[in-house]
Length: 132
Ligand code: ZN
Image (cartoon, rainbow, N blue to C red; front, side, top):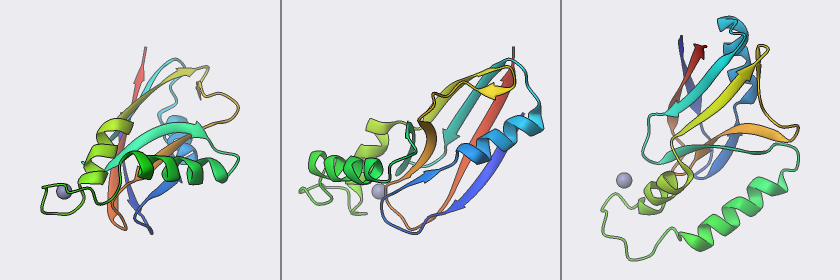
């Protein structure tokens, strides 16, 4: 079963918690044991799992990511968003989460995030739920 989601982002870089959306898909698919695969169909966005409690975590993450991959660094790509392409590759475009007893096997502090790297834009991501 594949669920298609749309998302409107508000900033150039942002972490958007999509955990509740994925849990809703899982409830609808009613899978006991299996796998949840989340996939983003963009080259300037990504997906990650990280802490969803302290808002300073995403803030610190973007501060450090921007130091590692600056927005402007004599890139050749004419669209002017090479930093977003590079970060998308570093962070990754898919996640796999085990499903056990009908729940995502996430740790207490783990949340699933859509990572906007070149917004604001209209975005999409897919959630595939596969029973064992
Ligand atoms: Zn580009």
